[in-house]
Amino acid sequence: MKHINYKDIPPIQMENDQVKHVAGRLLIGKEDGASNFTMRCFEMGPGGHTPRHTHEWEHEVFVHQGHGQVLLDDTWHDMSPGSVVFVPGNVEHQFRNPTDSTLTFLCLIPSGPPEL
Image 1: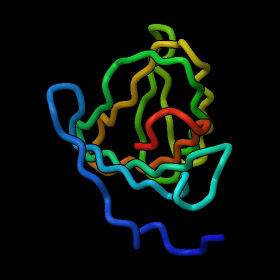
Image 2 (image 1 turned 90 degrees about the vertical axis):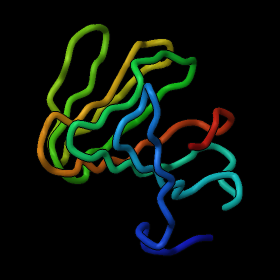
Image 3 (image 1 turned 30 degrees about the vertical axis):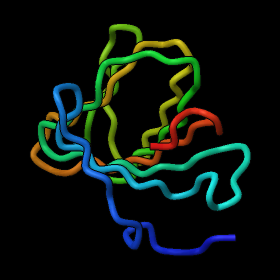
Image 4 (image 1 turned 90 degrees about the horizontal axis):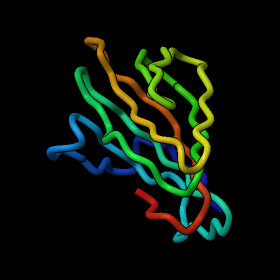
């Protein structure tokens, strides 16, 4: 069992040729005894983005704060607080933040893939 504030988990900064201004927190994973799902929280700074990519597993995303966009099958969709996004497996996708404020979203994936 786990009960903490997500901000007590140190963020892992992601910055390279494909990822810009992204910090991820592993909220719930294998080490917590979660055998079916992994819950992560991502904070994306202004101008940030994830890589444009495809993989076998699905994502379930909930936007907590800020505004951004998600690419699904070559179409960009706006996201705002309360937005829910389902990214099926094997669908090319990318998240980006074209605004001047931080975009914060939860992302759930099945167990097995890399947790963060």
